[in-house]
Image (cartoon, rainbow, N blue to C red; front, side, top):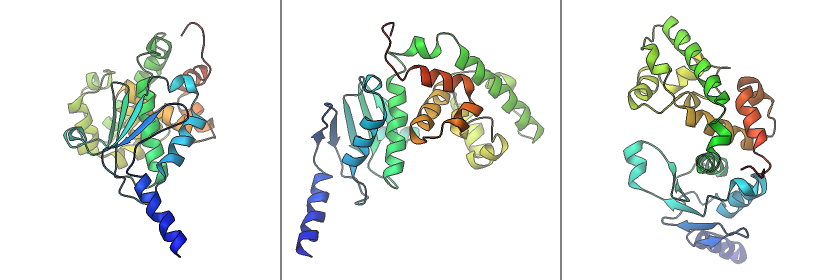
Length: 229
C-alpha cells in the first residue's frame, strides 16, 4: 500500500513538472492537469510515435493550463508561435490526444500551405459540400444566404448560425456523410484540421476516404517528406 501510495504521489508531482521528450519537444505545465488518470507522457509518446517527425517540426512546446483565449474564443486549445496551448481540463487521454493532434494540423498550414491548398482541390471539395449543406438546411427551414456558404474563412456570424440556431448535434444529423464532423463545416482550415485529426485518431481510414476523398489524398501525400517541401 505504501509503495502504491508513493507511486501515485510521484505521478501527481510529475503532472506538475515540465519535461522534454526524446525528440526535443518541451511540455510545460502552467497549471496541473485536473484529471489524475491522465498520463501526459503516454499521450505525448503516442503522438510522437504516430505522427511523422517532419510534421512535428514547427511545434516546439506544449503548454498546459488555463488561458484567457479559451473563454474569449470558446475554445480549449490553440496554436500560436511554435507552441500549442492546451486546457488542463480534459475528459481522458483520448480527449487530450485529439486536442493536441488537431492543433498540430494548424502548425503545418504555413510551412505546407502551398502543398495543402495550392491546387485548390481541397477548397473545391469543401465548397461543393458547403453548397450541398446550404440546400439541406434550406429544405429543413434553416435559411441563410448562399454567400455564407461560399466563404472559406471562418465567419463568426455563420458560426453562430450553425452553433446557436441549429446546434452542432442537430447539424451533425442533418449533414451526416457530408462532413466528418459538424465542426469541419465551419471553415476550410477546420475542414483540413478535422480531417487531419481523423487520420491520426482512427487506424481505419476508409470512412475518411469516402467522405472526403480529396482531403484524404492530400493527407496521405504529406506522410513522407519531399525535397520540394
